[in-house]
Image (tube, rainbow, N blue to C red):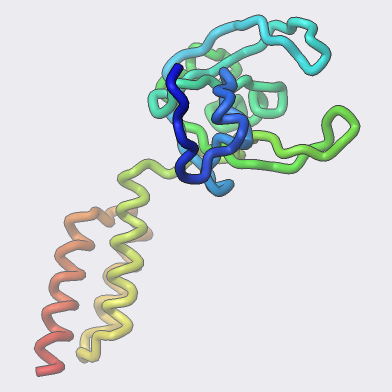
Length: 181
């Protein structure tokens, strides 16, 4: 293999190409949301060199699998209300780094967050909602409180859509521009 320069912020474990995801896999320690693509039972060597049979999940977003310990398996089971591993296929999990006691010392470990990650659609909805709130704060019209109440009603009834928020944002932004002219 031809020598390759190290570029960016690669962890030494990434350079050595460990087979499975680890705490070093999370760029700058930021959470990642992954979609379960498949699950396998694999013989994995532990710290002592002894082989253990482990559950490994593979994801649509990454070629490396993640060894799922009992803590993470219980969290996934709690989120999706099933311990049947095949029923986790297609489900999304959010992983993060947690400091844990292992092998007599404190080490960083991958953990599954104890909630189902927001879907991209929900994330966009929140993003648009935040923009509408900012625009509404800047808006000076007499109907400001009426608009605020309408948004609250729509949210309570779970009727907020990206299209509705986008139109509201455009209306508020246009009205604010007109006020400034």
